[in-house]
Image 1 (cartoon, rainbow, N blue to C red):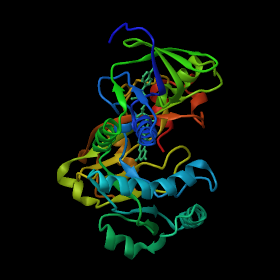
Image 2: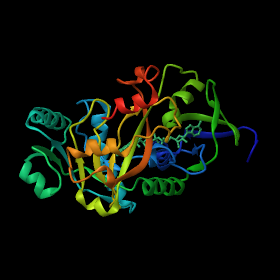
Image 3: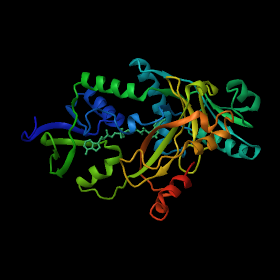
Length: 342
Ligand SMILES: Cc1cc2nc3c(=O)[nH]c(=O)nc-3n(C[C@H](O)[C@H](O)[C@H](O)COP(=O)(O)OP(=O)(O)OC[C@H]3O[C@@H](n4cnc5c(N)ncnc54)[C@H](O)[C@@H]3O)c2cc1C
């Protein structure tokens, strides 16, 4: 197909992560002629498989925001789809722990926030109930969210690919979009391997690179700030110390470094959240496990640095700079890494 002349398509989706695949699948199911372009050899190689695999209930988001409304609505749709497509998942529940009496007011405020978002199955539990659920976790009180769960993110991407293909989507891997031209009736999209494609509509689902795709089409006002999240993995012999999902109260940027028992039984600590310069830098200046151990101690004192190994990392596509971005250029890299462990 390399170098072929302009071809015509009704809808072109740029990006083969969970968002692009979902858009392509839903459009094709509604009778649209859809082509999806992905620059990597395999689909979902970026954020869609570099994450915690948690099905969020919708607790911390601002009431009325898209994030809150879509999370609460999408959560049950996702469970239904995971079940129907046989993707490994578990509605295991999570607790958000107040580690000291002075955190209880914040816990209650979070509870009220979640209720305003329509998360209506929450309860507040005391220290004894925490121990009954998680014998190795310490805390004064906690919020229990039964509808939070975990799923296999890689298996979900593969299921989406299978379903999209079955619905008639043409998926083209190793096809990076390099230029976009807007015309009156169509959009011209150039790729490095397919030549030029003319589409009636284009969906920009390029994740971390969505701002660059937008700029190619003449919309230069968007900026994506890469925000790395790193994990430490708990060694298998200690993974049973935490049964499900155990979070502290949310931090200023992320949800706070927490324990995730994955759907396959691994125990991860993280992710942290810190802004970086590069959209492709997953590994430089990794946070040492000792710092993860420090964060873990408040929730589960039985886990020490000796029980931890460096785990994977992922990069969030953040549309806002938030707090520490402006400090990146002025701090040394290691200081930046340590300053933002929340
Ligand atoms: C550390 C971390 C933890 C997270 N934990 C969770 C969680 O527990 N639960 C949850 O719901 N969400 C979580 N998320 C968020 C979730 O992973 C993302 O919201 C989701 O994966 C975004 O999907 P996407 O399709 O938009 O992006 P991506 O998966 O990044 O897909 C974008 C695709 O576009 C392609 N692309 C880019 N440029 C071009 C181009 N020029 N031409 C062709 N293709 C291109 C890329 O190669 C990529 O495959 C987490 C994210 C991170 C980083």
